[in-house]
Image 1: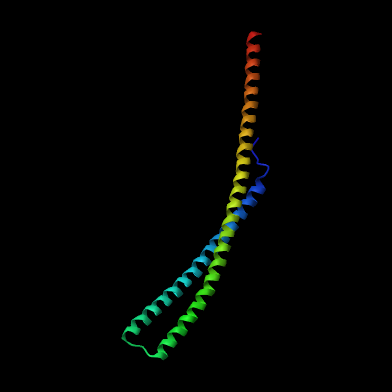
Image 2: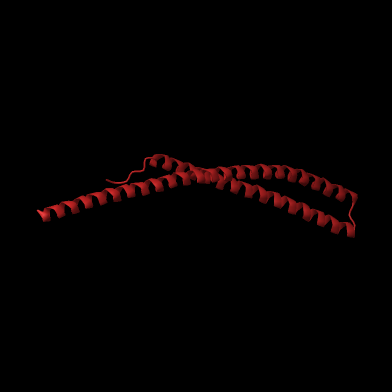
Length: 147
């Protein structure tokens, strides 16, 4: 008699779901990193432009150039605001997927623990029945030798 876990199909299904959620989480992390990297580049670009403008102010800069730079900085700030919103959305999505993955890990662990306990019970039953058979054989041998 071989061991067969009664919830094996459910465990397999839960493990498959866990892998799908893990893949979704990984994709959301990648998307978050990509958006955050773009935001960083924009912030760096703004900082470089402000430093450039400060350096040029010392040596003299026309009003037209100042307006042009300020207009460009304003546009970069609008883009930064947009990307900050995207980063927040991506972080929230990533955190949601992380939570779902954590919940699925707990669920899979529950089924694995049930399987482990069920197998231990199966082993105990098997050992118990084996002991009974051996005891019966010993009793039969003893009675056969006495006769």
